[in-house]
Length: 108
Image (cartoon, rainbow, N blue to C red; front, top):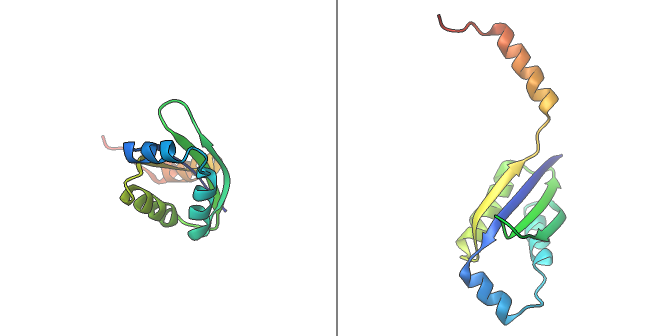
């Protein structure tokens, strides 16, 4: 099962929407969007700092599904800087690197 951390920033257009309707549930909107591509929203937070929101999405979905969400939300004009981080298994990567290094001959 894949796990993705997604984060981004709202645009001025989105902030106008928040002011017009301060009680809207962005976690519900993010959950529906995740489910539309086969994911499960584990958590969604509005945050202080570099990003306005952070979510954790899991499921049997590939990177393309998460990229599709990026395309959709950025095309809407409400979100920018949508960033996708993918959880990885460091032990597996290190094992593959060890195997690769055993076959690698450096230049020189």
